[in-house]
Image (cartoon, rainbow, N blue to C red; front, top):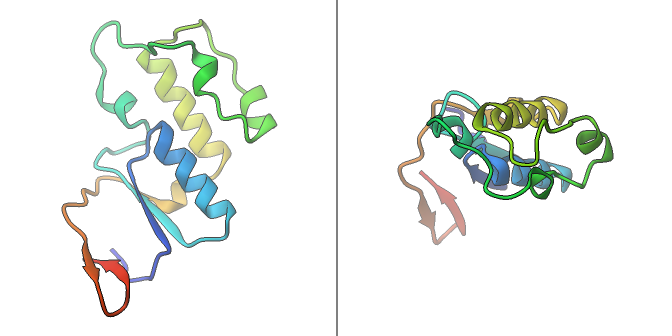
Length: 122
C-alpha cells in the first residue's frame, strides 16, 4: 500500500462504490476504492445463493450519467440474477476504467483523524 495522499477513499466496489469512485474521479479528486473481495460486485460478489436477484427492476440500478454505458448493456430480464448483476458490474468497471483505482483483497479495519492536519490516516 502506498503512502500517497488521497482526497477521498471509497469503501467497497459494489453498485454505490463504483458510482462514487467514478464521480469523485470526474471531479478531479485523487481517490481510491478498497474492497475485501477479489473483484467488483459488493453484495453481488458475495451473495451467490440460489435465486439471488435484484428485488427491484434492473433499470433502477442503471447509471444514467453515461449514455454509452447504459445503452451498451441489455438486461435479460426485469429482475436479473446474481451472475448477470456481477457481469454488469464488471462491465461498468471496465467501461469506466475503474480497476486501476481499486485495491482488491484489502480490508480497511480503521482510520484515524489527525486534528493537526485535518486529514484521515492510518
